[in-house]
Length: 453
Image 1 (cartoon, rainbow, N blue to C red):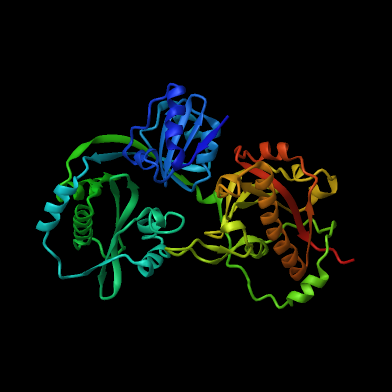
Image 2 (image 1 turned 135 degrees about the vertical axis):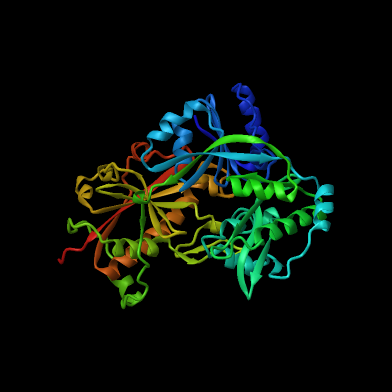
């Protein structure tokens, strides 16, 4: 059975590996997890994986359950993957597979970092500023710079103590450096430059400032290069190469991602009228909903109303206990199963099968154009909320109900029919959706165009 481990369970993870006669993780980034800081681990029989952000270290034989968990991400970098994993990965049509070579470097000690940092010459062409909460929010909002702060300076990872710097030219952030991850005694450097500002020495100066800061904080500075340009910069800065190793980049194909249009938030339908007219309706038109209707429906269900900030998680239209956001919304459509990614307001295709016949026991429900499936990820609940099975189900059932009521009100306002289904073969649906052991189906809800009565 697949077991998932949190950072505070990393020693139990290592013990489980030993019992399975698997070698402990070898990649540097895996130390962020085995050191109890961030990431997660999986073990299933004679197979295992360590995941830190988008970096993955695989151990043992190929395992379909572990890979099913990994493939929920849009991008992964498999570091020195075992050969047994490659055939199945290369057959996965949801991703493009690119093999490349990385260069590892010896860490710079705090003492060396301090000395190096003091010898670097300043560059008067741009201003270097430490990343504060305001800059972190700005960096997070732009695609080129989000990774600089995503892993160690934004919730729920802002407690890890990440730090970094930006370079400004005439008030514009031209580049940034941050912590890709944290180690018990060091950091991994993450650096990038805005398009149009490259080849001006910005990355060099930012990296120098980061090295100096590591020395001042008594931290080792780690560097792992994805390409030749990064390797050349590391060498220039004083890092010593430790060798190269193979890696594979998995990028989800765009055709398996459905970008939804912005939700229409100006529907002229009074809330009190929606409450008055709300009904469970079991008749609907067979026509599929448009992407705009899906956009509105899903945003109403649990869309983001306030983006994550350096000291707070994002907020959704539906509340959840301690803002756990443990409920995930899946869509069963004629052409496949999708997961709603509320952060990017998009749909991620899980598979191409039509499972609408599995969302409820009543045959009349199988013709609904849209089946919403509310799934709780128990691993996201805080320990006191997950004290026992009864509490997990109560908390998650309540949180799913908030989302369901949002759907009811939107459907009333938008002229759609909807009804919640409590009679569900959960075990069968769990299998059809390829869910993990810690993911549980709460209940389902069908939606379609209303038929005038």
